[in-house]
Structures are given as C-alpha cells and as structure tokens.
Length: 579
Image 1 (cartoon, rainbow, N blue to C red):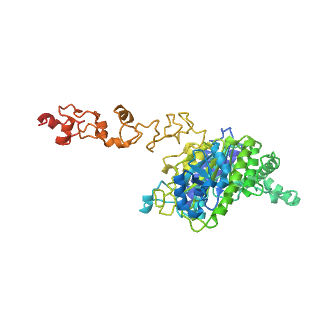
Image 2: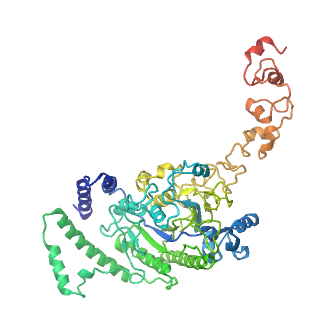
Image 3: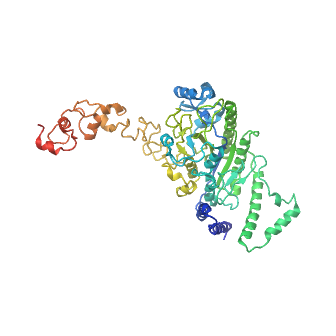
C-alpha cells in the first residue's frame, strides 16, 4: 500500500469514527467522507492548470472601474455619480466603444481588447435568484448580513450563502480536496496562499501552504539543524520511534513526510529560474503574483498538475477620498495583473493559468460626500490565455435609481450572476466533474445556468467563436450575437425576431416586416381580424372573405355573428347558415 492509499484509509477511519461528535458536525464530516472516498477520480489528469484568486478587500467600486462610454449612458452615470464621476475624456474606451476602463487601468483595457481579459458583470452572493419585487415585499431569501465586510467575505469565499459560521471550508479548498490525487506529490497540497489565512482555500482534507512574497518558503524552525543541532537530533529520535497507536503513528509519518517535502519545496523555490519580466517590487500584490509565478515555474519538479493560489490587496473600502484612494488601488491592481500575465507568457503557461478577481461586495451608485457606501452586486475580472476575453459576461445593470436592478433607490444593485455560478465555471475549467460541482457549491442547483462559458476551451457547437453557454444561437453561426427583440434567441435562429407572435417566414410571405412588432395589430383586409389572429388561424390577411374553417360561412361573418373562431368549424352556424 502506498502513502496516498494509507492517507485515504486513515482519513476515512477518522471521519467514520468521529460521526458521533454532534449533529452539527455530522454534515461537515459527511462531506469529508465523500471527498475521501472520491480520491483517485482525478489521478488520470495529465496536463497542468493553475487558478489564481485576487481578492480585493474592502468592497471594490466596480462602477468606477468599468464605466459607460456611450454619451447617453455616460451622462446618466455622471448625473448619479456627481463629483465622483470619472471625466469622460480621461476614460480608456474598449472595443465596441460603449464602455471603458478607469484611467488607472489602461493595461487591463489593452488585455481586454486583446481578448485576454473579460468582465463578469453584476456578480455577488446569492442563495437563489431574486427580484426587486421579492425584496420589497419581503419574500426573497437573501444571504445573511448583506453589506457586512466580514460576513460577506466569508460567504464569498465559502460559497455558503444561507448562514454564517456553519462551515469553515471554502469552495477553493473543497475543490482542492477533490483534485489532490491529480498531483503525484502526496504531502504538498494543491493550495498555496501568498496572503495569509482565508476561508476560500480551507478544505476538509487540505489546508493551504503559506509562502511569503518577501521570504519565500519558510523552514521548520523546530527542526532546523543549523539553528539547534541538539533539538534537531531529539526530533529525529522522536519521529523514528515505532508506534502502534494509529494517531501517533500517523502524526510521526506525516510530520516526517512534511519535513522532507517542505524541504524539497524550499530548495526548488530557491532554485527556481529567475523571471525576466519586470514587476513592481514595492507593491505587495505584485510581489505576491511574482511568487505565484515562481511556484508555477517549479510545478513539474514538485509533481503538481493542479495549483490553486490566493493573493489579495486591501484598501477598497472607500467611504471617503475615493477618487484618490481608488485610483491608487486600481493602478496597483492594473500593474500587477499585466506583469503577471507577461510572466505566464514568459513561462509558456498563459493558456493554463487563469486569474480572477473577487470582492465581498460592490458600492452604491449614489455617493456619500466624497465616498460611497457598501452595496451588493459588483463586477469581476477574469484574465488568461484561455479566457474568451474582450466581452462582458452577463448584462450590465440599469443605471437607474429605483430601477429594476436596484434594491431600493440608492444604486445598490441586485446581483444577476451568483458567486456559485462564477466559481463553478472556474471549477469546471480546472476539470472538476459536473457531478462534483454540487458538493463544492451546495446552492448551485438553485440556478439554471451552471457554466457561464467564459473560456475559449468551452464547447462551441457552431464554431462561431462564441461558447455555447454565451451563444444566443448555440447551433447556428451568429458571431455578432444580433438580437433585435432582446429575447433569449439571436436573430440567426429566432423564428420571431420582433417577438410579436407572428412567424418571420409568414410575415415575409405576406409582405410584413419581421422586425416591426407594430404590424401585429393591423387589419389590412378589414375583416375584423388582426394580422396576429390571421397568422394563428392560417388565413390570408389580405383577403376579406376567407373561409378558413370551410363551414360555408366567411370568416368575417363568423366573427360578427357569433365571435366564433374561424379556424374551428362552428357546428351551430353550419346548420343554420349565415342568416
């Protein structure tokens, strides 16, 4: 039996033996058992993929990060944002010309135009889809403690939007539990944190390994031979003692392996190739991402096919001095993202590394002096060579106070994309089986769309460059995504482009405009039936005395005498005749 088999066996025994602790703990232990028995599912993965979370602590004002540029839309934004509106002539417009990035994010705008960066619009914590009407009449099921920094950070990172403090595991950690067997190194976890403790990477079977962006991989102080040879010798003797007790034996073996593996990690990290891509060493975020790149560079030496990283930057809680503070934070983010993407290019892994941003919530569209208040939905960024970039995932909210996307009347927008959907799309890219997604994201079943389709490697059945999950005509080529009536179907596959209830082919055959909904109410033959009715009856809208039901009574008489539907044989009138 190899080490991984022993580890799994031990974890199963531990989990099964602890079921009697309490009813509250049982749910978490059952998840641990499920993960333990699932080990081995991903051992056949052969490629490399890394997922990097950049958490923006404080609540990023995404509505000043990504701004309407089209004149009318910008004016609407500026009228609400008042003195906090970013001047239009300083914005960096992106392809399409309708939207733009903050002037501090010019490099992100360039990545967007290159198709390497996308924006996920109005994403946030949700238990289930909700509407403004449900919120106002108090029938909506909402995540607890909206607008609270600590609680929304926890919900964002755990993916558990129904309660606070019920489980400390995060969706990144639960994903790592399942992916552990993809890595040939049984001791090193798939997760590395460059920014200290976080909920996101905590698993039931795994915990993140902390790496300092300043000092790299720490050594075991209690075991360091150079610091204390005597203590080192004592520890060697203790760990070498043969034990019959399962806990003592497991502690000794795992500690010995951890010391060996961590030493190997430290040596590999110290000897990793020097990256030539310049970065800002005075920026903690840039240093963290530089360290991530170094850890990716030694992935093969360490036997790691799946890696999950956490970095972060604070200072986004802009209740005051927002224009200055937010500009500085965005500039640091922009520089760090751009240099990190170039590092992945230098390493030749840009297509197998995806970086995404998250923040506990957005900020109100209305202002509070020279700052903004806590809100709900916000925008996130996704970056990588496999990202279907240069596009907005989802729909931008209506910049309208008291509008359909507003919680009340202060521009706190209701998320239209749940963190579960966002995370599940990333997890599927990491090759998590669809059957495992519900275990990682317990509330995912509440949402109809499980994959937002923002990767180039996502299925594209019609080969039009638009992933099926984003395509309004997934089986009909429609690269422009033109959609005249704004319904769920694009013009290329929509049989009713103006959504007037009349088939496009029928309208064209009878001389009507399939893009003009007003013609459904016309009655060109003045027989008392509108075009919409004639299309449903199958009668000719230009011929007055059609007898569609062949009962010997003209349709117009059917309509006048009895209000009968001329498409259905009126037995009474058929017997009595028109008189």
